[in-house]
Length: 253
Length: 318
Ligand SMILES: Nc1ncnc2c1ncn2[C@@H]1O[C@H](COP(=O)(O)OP(=O)(O)OP(=O)(O)O)[C@@H](O)[C@H]1O
Ligand SMILES: [Mg+2]
Image (cartoon, rainbow over the protein chains, first blue to last red):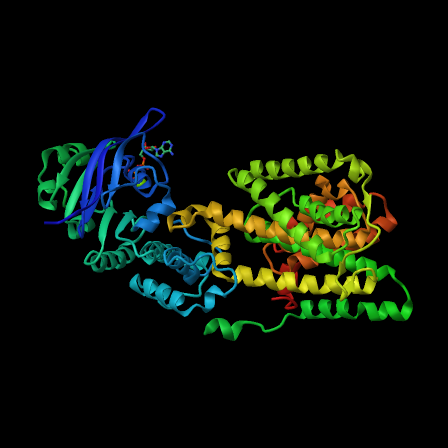
């Protein structure tokens, strides 16, 4: 039997009058790729923010590897093995690509309070950073400044940074946001490789991608999970059709 | 590696400046004109203070408007012991660095909970408190300040009474300060500070308690500036609360911005320009502050990298 790595129960969050997360309960199992879909404003990013600790829920509980992390700050969750990527690219502008990734690496090898040895001469650190960059197809771009990368490369770097923290659980918030088909395919290939060895919670708008990758899908509407199950069962679920795509909708389009 | 090939191994502007500073006492010896020695001495002490401010302001993105507090703490760490006829330099310097570190730790722990303009205001407020704290102690001269009759001594080895000895002591201190900050900024810790300046949210997300790193940086910066204060006390022979005035903090910010915020050597260029311009402008007009203001506006608008940025553009600084 598979183990539950992340268990969310009765999570709620409101912003003023807006209910962004509404009594949401959801489990993610070890090794699976769990996709979350839902229309704009459904509360997907808000959910990720609560899982990564950027915002705290009004109610409910989040267990990660049976540990209550509901109120832990982001850096502590990172040390426990949760990493996220951002829907709106969030990188260290002004620094080299490799420095961005090396920072993510050194955050989790426990030696960041070193004041004297030059960090860029640390071979192990550089090598792990280069490995993470290879994994997302950014080899050869190590010494480029972040602001000189293309949008697609920014999205690849987003994933590399999350990966470099050596997480047990990856939270990916629309990794293909704003990409063309070709660039999107690149990310799809990366995710296909990744899903073999990581537990992933993926938020994605593109249905083809979701059905190609997901072991399980949860549909979020107005902060509430209206359906959760295998891709097949989601495709044929009446409520999903109604709420998410309109009655005429076809989930394959 | 690519880095190695493109890295310039020396920096023209720096080498020339260091050479001039190193040889200046010889020139003074020959001409007997002390004036330039004093000018350069003050320049180097302020440069150390600006280097320390640059660590938090330029590298760390923490805009402190209260850095002069450490100049004051450092100076009084020489002056108060001297008042009790304790002239031991090691004791004075350790006191300066330690008290500055504690002051930075306590005020930083509170200030760094805030951001932006609140941070600026609160750092300023703490320094005003230190200012009025000193003013209120009649024993140490209050408003009028305190005369230091004897400069620091270091056992039987040497003392700073002789101006040239003091000069070289400051000169070596400046070089060591620059070297320390260079090492720190290239270390793992320094990378975290740069990262936090660039994108604090992402740094927290990848596992950094950025508050703690910034606080450590804030304390290091305070310690170094306290050291500069101890030198300043020795140099001026007279200390007063004025040293901690908010305008003194403003002048340090001016030096950092003018020289090139976040550049290793920026504070050196900034302090040099400040001291030389002040000397020159104040000899021709009493409104020299006006020209400083105008200059700062020009730099902020048209030369974001400050003097260091301009020097690297023409290939004199890397
Ligand atoms: N910080 C905030 N303050 C106020 N309202 C917010 C805040 N963050 C999100 N919201 C609101 O909460 C709701 C959910 O937003 P969220 O960004 O989580 O949606 P989403 O599913 O990620 O949408 P998208 O597909 O566009 O990325 C929206 O109505 C949004 O306006
Ligand atoms: Mg979103």
